[in-house]
Length: 135
Image 1 (cartoon, rainbow, N blue to C red):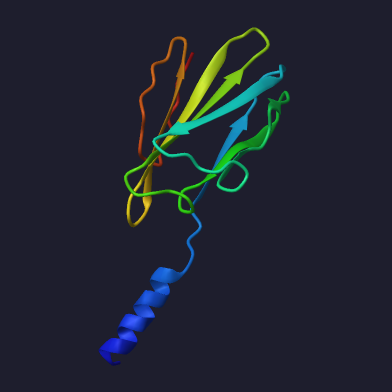
Image 2 (image 1 turned 135 degrees about the vertical axis):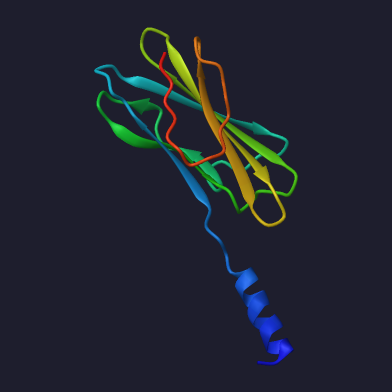
């Protein structure tokens, strides 16, 4: 294969669109409804409805649903960070906050995640392990 064919083939692979969606699912293991509020901040913002969206505002008892989706490719810029904070509250006013922090790079994005509550401090993780916190 000639070098020019190799370069054309390689550039075609690099030009292919990439899907890098992240979906946050939540299970309500109680007999009470949970209120969901998502806030998006950062050094740059993704476009609501196109690059991120909140799927539900109320999670019923015993339900599992996707509460948040965001794209980690389209709209993500090099050197910018994108923070999502999802506050999950019960009728008594107790809450847990889920956090995702995305950092844009020229070739991809990285993400850290964690949770916090009144008695649990935020400790961001960047792995694919299951972490448990008790409150």
